[in-house]
Amino acid sequence: MNQVLLLIDVQRNMLLPPEPVPGAQEVSSMIATLLERARAGGMPVVFVRNNGGEDDPDFPGTPGWELVHEVLPGEHVVDKHTPDAFLGTDLASILPPSASLVVAGMQSEWCVRETSLAALGRGHALTLVRGAHATYDGDEAAAAVSGEVERELAAVGVKVVDLEEVSMP
Figure 1: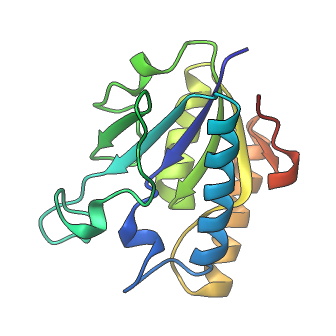
Figure 2: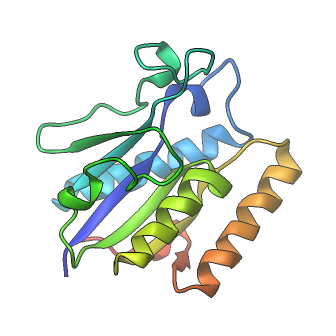
């Protein structure tokens, strides 16, 4: 089975000052580890990048819009305007129909949740990496929101695992 690492909105405005998500260093470290392991195993990588409006910190072309990690040759970047990364983008045509997705990124209750649900609806098997996604709302509230998203997605068939349990090529 094909496996793809899908990194959702791993952008500077979410993980770097001036206003990173709570626990940004830990989340960023986990995402970096996933990316390193995927690349080492030859696993395809797709970056999803949010394109905010003029007043948003992720407005195209601004420092906050930039991806945290360098995109290597052969990797894809999908620009989106809605929480569902499939809506109005070419993501579906990039992913093999039988691809199993390993998902990480921002924000748990928005883009991670909506893209995961859309991927399930398209028949993709999904693995969400616990702790490799985050949101705002203060440390405790953000952790609670992320945990609730994990429970919701697990209930509909997403495999939620710790970083050590992620199986990659």
